[in-house]
Length: 393
Image (tube, rainbow, N blue to C red; front, side):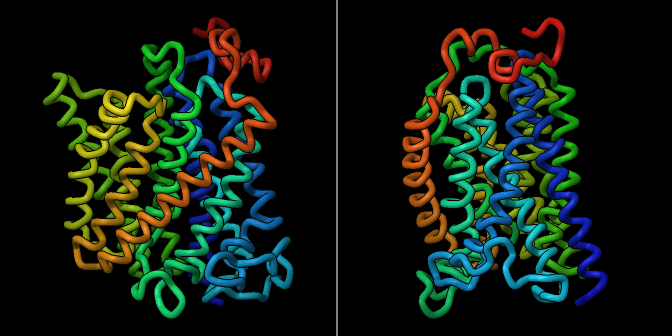
């Protein structure tokens, strides 16, 4: 065991948990109407709790157990055989377990942005739990756990897929799942209300930015120059994407908005995630510069052309950002084109099919959408019996 590596991954674990609660919760909560803000916070918080328990019970074993190329098996359920002396590389395996738990938390939490303001709480919890175990955990095993996409004998591609911190495992899966759920739900009855608190959005985005240092820097699993470079390129991509988003917005609409610039930040962060262990600061600047424009145009395309109410642009920002960053690894010569593109296709098809099936099965138990009256009155009071403000709109 290396003490410096262990100390850094402990910090990184806290940073990644901080991304979901309160970072993502505030970012999403500020974007919805005031009558629904508590429901969004509740979704993020409850998902955090449920994924933590499920990861201990069986999720970690599926993702990082010693099963086969498809899944890790059940040998590490409840952390059987793992104690404080068991190592994963130079850190305790129990620390690797909890670090990876924070990824299993934020991935289904990202999907929340697609279905806010119109979904039932029972559906959210049941679907999120099933999705994490049957979509996220297997994909994590395929790429990070020595499975189908990790290269070598028995793998789908001779070369390993390069996904340093989750462009495919986290962002592509969450983005495509968000698109499927939003399509099945249908649009909100009233889509024209602006974000009720852009200040929350900025604070949440800032927390995500800081937390992302643990997300990407921690994925090095050691306290060394590689971790320092991952943090550096993460920051550069985020800053550059923020600027290009704001500039592109000003060129198109005459103004640069607060919500716009911080959404650009998230686009830059999502796009650099898979590449953060492989690219230079200048290459990160290129990724961020393109991401700020590409993801903004994707928001317009999903809403205008596809007419899918992915309410908070989960696919356009996270999904497309992760896909773009994954391909840029090959563009810069840091990964094999066949492995990078092939993995995106395999994981994409798997995610879409499984998300559709799980959503349909969950809908047999819990209705997916609330009634018209509940949607009109807001989910805060109808689903949770509380209001964030005295006069919610």
